[in-house]
Image (tube, rainbow, N blue to C red; front, top):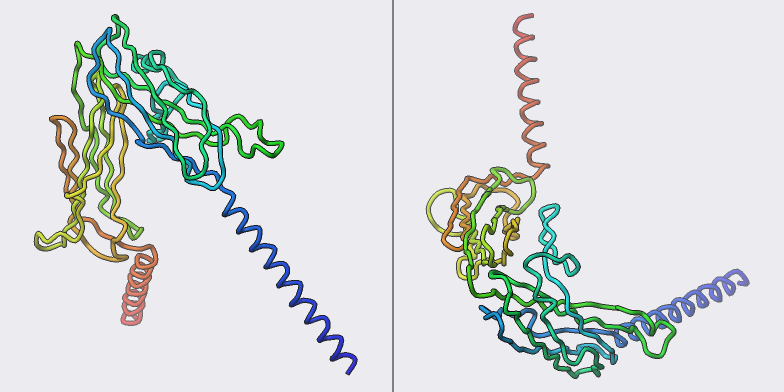
Length: 310
């Protein structure tokens, strides 16, 4: 009986400890979920078209607080270029180029502010284009930086807790050149993953940015019935001057095993490239089974021949 009582006490203590732990964890989770900093800006970018040297342009963006805590922010003008290493097209707000002078022409008001939960603040910006501004594309960004994570804590002196970039695309009138080429358009003939992919490389050889469009179509092996297409909503990507952009299109809903006819159409300005291939979807395990069957068949044939010879 003593052993049974002891067991009950220990069991009850474990249950109580578990309940308290879970309650504490849920309380912490609720606190973490409720005490959040969420910053958004709208719009995400601005395409302001052609600018005239010697004139000015103005616009605005909104800083929105979608969280549950008030935050402070500051707005900073920055260059906008891209890093194309490792086939990536990563925004770069630090490197200057001949196409990022606009960062020096930007004036932002106000440069700092505070946004309460559920509220928004308007940031105005103006671009004064110098009379001797070079022709061609010019790009800049306004970085909206959350400058504190908690005004009531010792960490309130954190410089940047979060940063969102508002990108401005423009071109200066004059000798503008619009030209591009599609240097690669590939579709692998076999895929060991349950996806169909197509890749391409587009190069902007002009001095203004251009939009590249990507259409992926997947057909059954026989006939022209589409099993997947993004024709109605093609993928688009902005390609800056003097840069190459690698892009991959993926059909995520592809079956594990099958044979399809795949077509990718890539276009930019007046250039278009179309490639079409038969693609075999074959998971590794299926390939292993095929090889095992072939090995077994070869072994059986060799064994039969040896038996007959004997």
